[in-house]
Length: 55
Image (cartoon, rainbow, N blue to C red; front, side, top):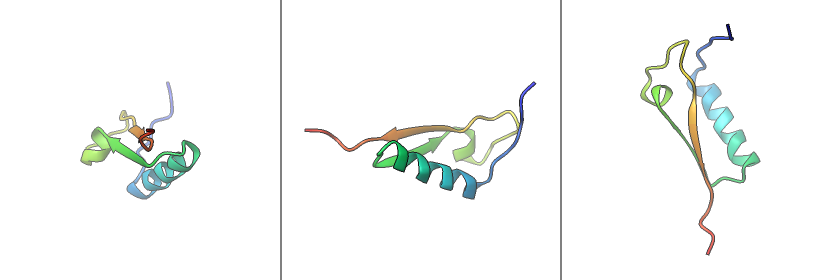
């Protein structure tokens, strides 16, 4: 039905750096099967973007 692929660690690092820049995030954390090194063709890349605390 859709495109199934497994991305490597370098591609994820590049993507998270770009997300941090675009979202003006302090940090981007990847979690789930990719973070655990257990990704399959059916896996999604889950991430959370953390912004600096506003006082």
